[in-house]
Length: 333
Figure 1 (cartoon, rainbow, N blue to C red):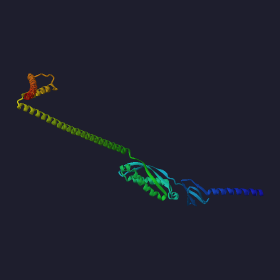
Figure 2 (cartoon, rainbow, N blue to C red; figure 1 turned 90 degrees about the horizontal axis):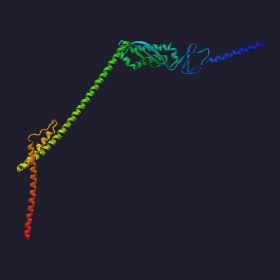
Figure 3 (cartoon, helix red, strand yellow; figure 1 turned 90 degrees about the vertical axis):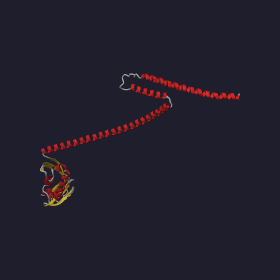
């Protein structure tokens, strides 16, 4: 009997020890980082366990919900949206949210993710349905901002913060996409034509400016050349006038040799001009060439006469100088 009592007590003690250990283990909860556990006592919310070790009363308290408090992302499925101008498009998106209050996220809404998806899809139809198709395709930032403001206010009672809502894709109908492609192509061709015309216009302006500058420079060159020619002709005229005056004085003094020399010079220059003409292939001496020979002979006579006059003048001066010297020697005698 004693052996049986000792063995029974030992089994009871071992069972009690195991029960105590299991009870202690049931009262300790380890919460991982990024999660929050709600604690319920007799089915009612009691507290929230944060990451780390948490204590609860076994058999009375229990963990109700394990809530992910990290930022999460949900894909919004595609849906048909009718715009303000009655164009049908297909749109989808994505929402980024984070649970800030685990208790309200657990007990204020039955299915948080499903509620978020329905709320975002409904507001996408509302916001995009109030815009024209052109505005819808070109103002995505405005759509995202309006959706975020509406959804963030709606999910605040659930202890959730909507961080971002992005429209991923907007797909218009096939016929509308083809029409938009043709319109875009026509617009690009129009811009190309305008740019080409502008380039041609600019090129014509530059060419006209170049021609204008060339004409101005050419006119200035002709003006300068005319001025130089006029100056040369003026000087030549002055020289010819001086020569003519000299010849006139010689004629007035009775010297016909100067006149013959002047006429012979003009005659020789005229023959030289005829000989150097570009159109002249054969040069025929005129019959009056003999007169030229006579003129040249006259020039030779003029030269001889001038030389003879000069020599006789020197001899006369010498004789005049010799006469006073003779008279002086006679007086001395």
